[in-house]
Structure formats: structure tokens, C-alpha cells
Image (cartoon, rainbow over all chains, first blue to last red; front, side, top):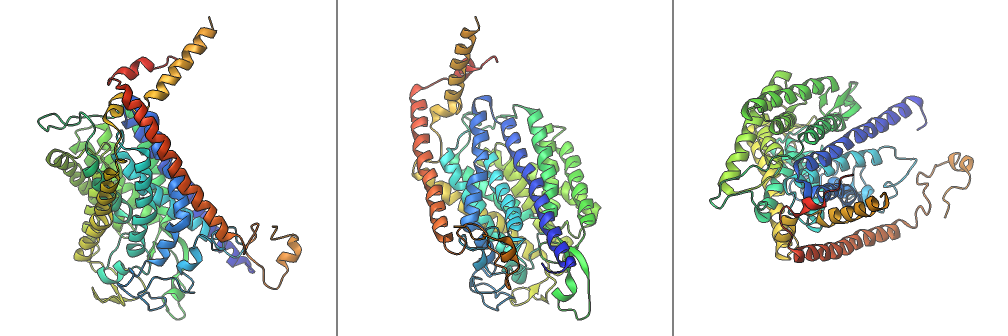
Length: 466
Length: 74
């Protein structure tokens, strides 16, 4: 940094992402609080600890290989050529945005005076990874082993979601070029995939003991502490706001970037480097939250647990196109997503005996899937990138956003990279006898021994006060 | 081990070397190997202890409400 303006821009960008990371930490705090609020007393501490371990496990694996995958896989590999080197191979060459710089032993994966962005950008994506793993965590509480959850968290948080981010979020991703895929704030890239992954695991894991009667009728195991659920979800809303900012590039000159001679156009952009504004996405974030809450209150007949969750589902459903929607479109799309998610949750629960303890598959998976499909219709014809506009299936140029591409994208996110790997990994873990805790432990409570020790300690303390 | 011993010399060099952590340029791969051992080792150790804990608790066959007798008052 040798001139003041360049230094100011660089330091501002560094600080901008750093602030979003701190804000997004609240998502994880929210998930922890929320899961404790939903779980039963005898499982509280285990539930909390399981979700807490997402932080270190996904962080270290994200450092070792997750971040590298994001930069290496935009071409598939082998599906569409990169706009940087015209090759469809993994991007590991000497180019500026090559994965080569993000190997765990690279000098840029550390304090480096010549690079002030990699660490904060790495952390922003890492927080997205925690979220993906945490979404799965809620659905499977009270009966999964910590070992199995750790493996599953790493799989979704540091591998599968990163593949889909490379394909459908990276500015060079093949899904943009071939399908015209658009998912500005991750309806599919984080939420549909994590929801699908959770569903795949749940199929193998099975329901909590007592969830279904002998005749197969589902029973309600409602949240045990509505106040913690409320605080948790409000924290998630807050962190989600930070996530929206983290998905943007705060200041960028699109003139030279798009090759427009003599044109200077400074703006915020979305993750695809097409223009949007923080102001605009603030409108849409709050309006889709509101649409979700209003619809949730109606369909859930005022049930607080589902109404709060519906606020989240509303944002998730509108997120794919919230960089371009009108706020009222965002509100209505949020409301539609909530109705679909809520109805689907109870239909799947009854039909397939799936016990999703927190409604994660519905709020993230179904709402995210629906959001992608709706986006294809509402933003039909918009360019998926600023670099070049081409036809679907071309591969060397970028297709426009369209309903078919979005639908196929939703299937890739929810099914191919979400549900299928979740099911397969859970099957393997189950085959090893490592997936589910013993029935006797589930009945006694995962915290039984901790509680027993606490009681004995209390007795000892009480006896010393006589 | 120190990569920088004089900031004035370091920053006034014709080409400033960005990596300033201890062992820059020579220890990164070794650090990654150590990190991987630490990570995988954690899974091995915790898997073993969790299996033992679950087996121990399963053998006791506690009832669904037995935990209530363990609730502490303060």
C-alpha cells in the first residue's frame, strides 16, 4: 500500500468483512441458545456441547481444505471453462484467484503484509460454513453421537457446501454459465443444501423415542423453553443481517472490471460482482422477514415457535433474488415460502415419519428450494453475471437467469449435494454402529451422569454448611 | 526463527517480504502436518471416551424420569 486512496479502500474492505464476521458470530450463538431451548432438560448440556463443537471442527478443516475447494472447483471440474484461464480443469494455476494461494501451507494463509483480505474473507466464508453445519445440528438433537455429528458437520461445513458455493456462488462458477443460476444471499447455496443434508441424515437416524405412536401418529415434543427459542431466533435474525452484508463486495469499480473503456462506476456488488446496494438489500431483508412472520402467524395459528421460525424462512425464501427484488416482492415471496415450508414439514413428518426436531429441513431446505424456483420466474431474463451474456448450456458465456436453470440448481443444492451425501454418510456411520446413541441412554438422558455428579457435589456442599 | 529482526530494514527493503510469522518460508508444511495430527487425534480420543461413556450409562438402564432426582437446588 503506497498511496493513501488505495490504502483507505483496502483497509475499509478489510474492516468491513471483519465487522460482518463478528456480526455473523451471533448466528452461532443463536443456534446454540435455540437448540437448548428446544431440547429436553436431560439433554441440554450435550445438545449445547454438540453444537459448540461445530466451531472448532469446521474451522480447522476449513483451514486445511475447505477454503482451497472454493477456489479450485468453480469449473466443476470438467464442466465449463474458467473465464480466467479458459481451462475446465481445477483452478490451481498461477492466476490471481487460483486455489494455489489458499493451500493450508501457503504464506497467504497467515499474517502477510502483502495481503489484507484473505483472512477476513476466509473467516466470512467460514461463518457461512458454521451455519450450514449448525442447521443440520438442530434437526438431529437428543439421539446422535457427538462423534457422528462431528463427521457430518465437517462433511457439510467444509466439503459439500463449499462445492456448491464454488459451482453456484463463485463469479466463475459453472452453474452461472450453463444454468444461469442466481442465488445472491444463499437460498440454495447454504440453506437448501443444509436442509437437504439434514433430511438425508434424518432418514437413517430415525425419530426420537416416543415421537410417533404405535399407530404412526406424530406427537408434539414442543420447545421446553420458549424464551430461549425466542432469544435464539432473534440472534439468528441479527447475524443473518450481517451475513447479507458479508455476501456483498462493499466498494468496487465495475467499469474496468467489465472492460468498459473510459467508464468508472463505483458501487457495492453482490457476490457475483453485479451491482446492488446495501440500502436496497436492507429494504428486502426486513420486508421478507416481515412477510415470513406475518404468514407464519397465520398458518401456525399464532404458535410462537413456528412464527419466529417463519421469519427466518421468509428471509431464506427471498434471499436468492433479494439483490434485485422490489421490497413488496420480497415480502410476498417470503410469505409464500413460509406456507410451503410449514405445510411440507407436517406432510413429510406424517407421511415418512421424519422427526425434524426444530423444523430445520422445512425452514432452510423447503423454503430455500422454493426461493430458488420463484427467483427463476421473477428475475427471468436478468444476466447471471456482468462479464458476458450467453445462452443456456453454452458454458463459455453466462446464461441469463431462467426458471429451468433455477429449478435444476435447486435440485443440485437440495438433492445432489445435500440429501444424497447426508444419507450416504449417515448410512456408513450407522453401519459402523456410530450414528445413534443407545436406546437406554436416550431414555435416561445424555446429561444423566453430569447431573448425577452435580447432585453429589451439591450434597457435599450442603453438608458442609450445616 | 524470527523472520523480522529490524522493522526499519524490513519495510525499507526494495521488495517488502509480506510473510512475517516465525519460520516463514520453511515451516509451513510441517505445521500443517502437526495440525492434521492434532485434528485427527482429537477424533480418535473423543470417539473412544464417548463410546465408553455411552456403554457405561446404557448398562445402568435408568428410567425416563430418573434424571429428575438429580436436579440440583442451587
